[in-house]
Image (tube, rainbow, N blue to C red; front, side, top):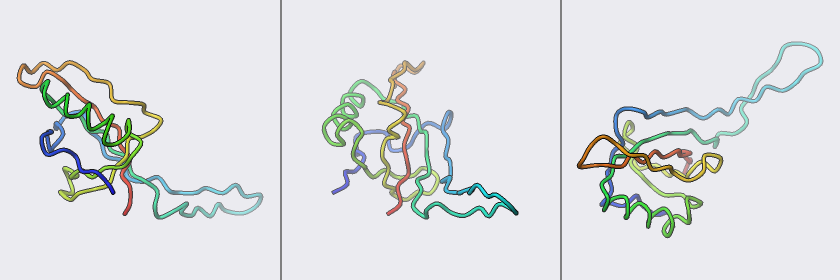
Length: 123
């Protein structure tokens, strides 16, 4: 069963510092003669999003518990509403990115910036 992003956490990332990459599933075979005939690797290649959330101390504690306990240090997928598409999407932390690195923010009400590097999963 896929977990849901906790309702007590911010439901939308900040506007600045976010990105959304479409899936790169183009295959360029090496050919000896003639033109290259690119093709698709898979219809299920994941897209990628990098979202930053601003959190207060209590929200950071909820996020810590969610990350460690609920989604097994980021190894399990979860559902979160995509801020552009406005629909729930299954995501998982990008393994090569490592765990989130908390950064101080300039806001007193939300003193933590929590950047997430996620893969958008199909299905």
